[in-house]
Length: 86
Image (cartoon, rainbow, N blue to C red; front, side, top):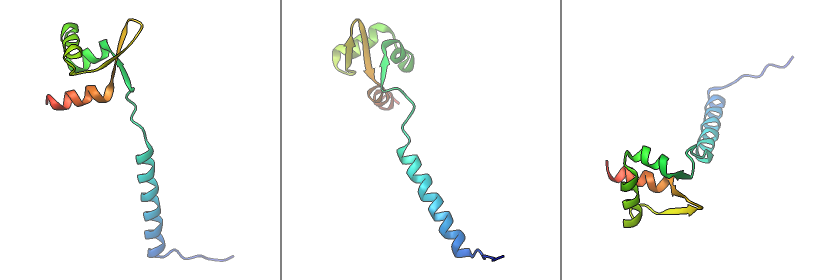
């Protein structure tokens, strides 16, 4: 039976490899928030009324895409508006 010794350098190399793999996994991880939000979700998130949301849409503070009778808003744009108001 052959015995292999693990050196301190071996452990450091393993640690570096593990850290690099974890960084790569974190970089590739996509956020779980949906890309598009409905009007009701936006109103809840921003704590605003339907008329205020309509005013945001009319003034250009938020842009919406309309599918049928439903307005959809980009979640990144809603987050940006939240950050600007903090």
